[in-house]
Structures are given as C-alpha cells and as structure tokens.
Length: 315
Image 1: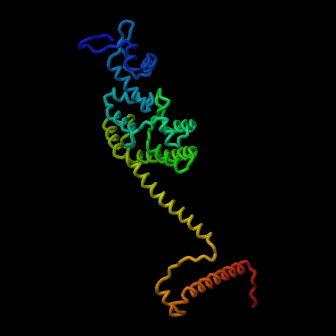
Image 2 (image 1 turned 180 degrees about the vertical axis):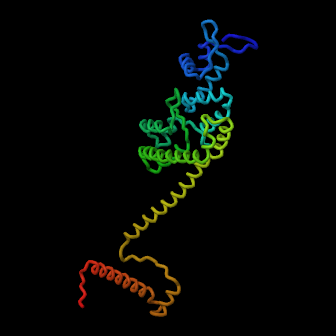
Image 3 (image 1 turned 45 degrees about the vertical axis):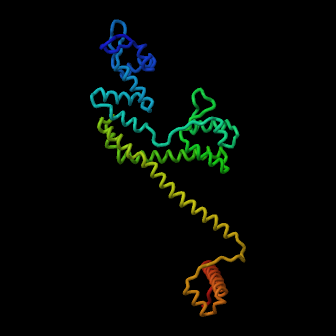
C-alpha cells in the first residue's frame, strides 16, 4: 500500500487481496463480471482504492448469506445507480439472522457420552453431525458446538425413556422433512399476501426493502406460534383418541361375566321401582336389556333372509 497523510489509500492487486481475504484470481474474476469498479491504470499496474476494498467485503458478506454472483451484481448496480443498498442489506441481515432466541452451546465428548448412558458410539456421533444436531469444533476432537441445546435435550430424554438412538435419528429425519414443508408453505403464503408488494422490483428499492425487513421482524414469531398452537391441538386430539382406543380394547377383553356400572335417569329408576320393587331393579334392567338385544338380533336376521328371498309368503 502506498500513500500517506490525507491522500486516499491505494492498493496494488496483491495488497488488495491480502486486505480483503480474496485471492488475486478472484479479484480479477470480479472485475471481468463487472462486480468491481474499474481500477486506475498507472503505468503498467492497476491501482485500487478503499472503494474496491469495501466492495469486496460487501460481496463476501452477500455470498455468505447465500446470494449468487448474478443477484449480487443486480444489487450493486442498483446501489451504483443511486437507488441505495442500505435497506436491501438490512433485509438480508434480518432474514439471515437467527429465527429463535435459543443460543448455541458447547459440549465435551465426555459429557455427551455421559448423557447417553456413558457408552461411546462413534456412529451415532457421526450421524448427529450429519443432521446438524452437533457441529465439530475446528482443531478440537473432544468438543462440539450444539446449535440447539433444546433439540439435544429432547434426544437425551427420549433415549432415557428407552428409544434407541437409531430410531431418534430416523424420527428427526422424517420430522425435518415435514417441518421444512410447513416452513416452505408459510413462506409462500406470506410472500403472496404480504411481501409481494415490496419485492416487485429487482432489486427492491431501498425504502421497500427497509419496510420488508421491519415486517420480517414482526412476522418472524408467527410461524413458530402457529405451529406450537396447532401441534398442541393435534397432540391433545390424537393422544386422547389413542388412549380411548387402548382403554376400549382393554374393556372388550374383560370376562363376559364381568359387570360395568351404567347410569340411568332418576325417573327411569323410580318407574322400575314402582313396577317391580326396589330390590329387583337391577335384575329387571338386565332382563329388559337382554330381551331388547335378542329382539334386535332376530329382527336383523329376519330382514337379511327376506332381502335374500329365502322366505316366500303364501297368498
């Protein structure tokens, strides 16, 4: 780098590469694609300035957030045309930021093994890393980053309840596919009804992007709140239904001579008492019920035979 005092900083391409973290080859590729302003030619060398360094850092930040070079070029051209980029970058930062208040944690291999019964299972660790439940720490074989401590805690509880680790991993894979579908549908819904009016321009204007970023902050919790409420409703419905089915099966397996209490209206009980006496109410109800069941069974059999033409009436 040359220049001193009030003179703007100047870089040779090698110096620019060192300051930005990009390679010389990458810088030249960006120039060819029009992502960098044309450098000043001085003799046989190109001279780069602070604006080039700032632009390289912006490109690197957008690439880290998943933007393609083509979309980055559109954003930068809009900025160069005076439309502004602050709102767009704010929207990018808002969408790319954390979508939960949960904070990542670290865990040692020894503590991890202890939580899962003290047994070392390298295959299970590798699968957890593949699923993103754990992330390896650079240069540390005995420590992991835990992006979601809650998710790990669920796995620990399920394992403690007797669920094998392979079943937990398979369930997570299935659940993740279903949740990703829900997230995709929620984004399609909000894009169609909320964000379409702000994102009609490519890239959006600075003010539209800033307003869209504000809406992302407001609407971000809604997806989780909706899923939480609907999951609670569905769990209550299906758990109750399954419990009733299980108890019903247990009841049907009871001995035939077992008894089960039945509630009758007071006026019905009083009428039976007047008819047969208080001491014979239970016997009367049983006999009446059995006679009704037999009558309905006979009626059903008769109706079936008549429908099949097995009974011929004589004139």
